[in-house]
Amino acid sequence: MQAEGAHAGPRLPILGDQAAASYQRYLKSFEHEIPEFLKTSVKKDVSGTN
Image (cartoon, rainbow, N blue to C red; front, side, top):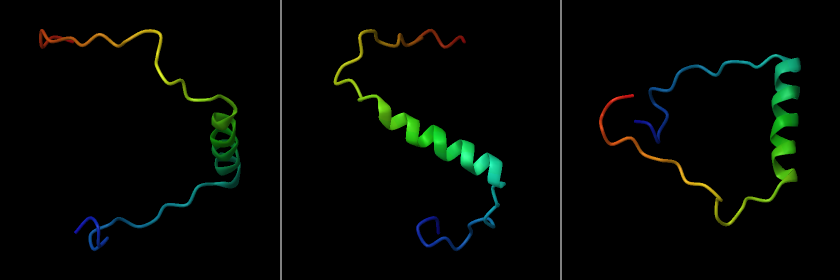
């Protein structure tokens, strides 16, 4: 169903100012290379508490 789009919701428009700002953020994301390795790692909480 998901791949076919048979039960997809209607497309929602994005206003011009919002679309322009979103696209500028998208373009800016290409200004920095993706590092091969991160300097720090994310610690995982395995205790089950937040």
